[in-house]
Amino acid sequence: MMTKQFLIDLFRLKAKFAASSAIATTVDYCLYLLLLRFEFTPEVANICSAGTGMIINFILQKNYIFDVKRRVRSAFMISLITSIIGISLSTLIIHYLTFIPFFAEYQFITKALATGIIFFYNFYCKRFAFEKKLL
Image (cartoon, rainbow, N blue to C red; front, side, top):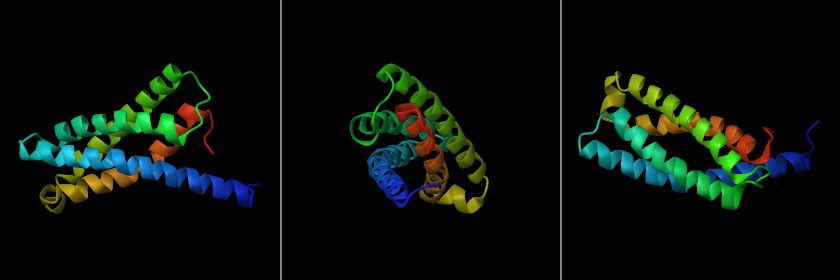
């Protein structure tokens, strides 16, 4: 059974994860919108911008969020694989949402929706990558 302290600690960890993700996501969004202005397709723009955000996120998570219980190389490889899967999923979400005229016109909303969906996937996969646990 989960104790009150466990839930509080989990909430704090998710809040710290959200803060580091906010930094990486800000870079991701700015780069995504900039690449769209240079007429990159939404899918290519997302791969480039999310890849940049992924690197920023790894550095922040390794240094400030998770208690690394693996070799850094192993944590990076697991994190990289889960990030590539997350980027692929968010790219697919963006690709299919862009067929809907509203989302095609408002790419910022499209990107926000994809980011929100992938947030929880990323949290639990990254926690596993760094701390060898899911909950």
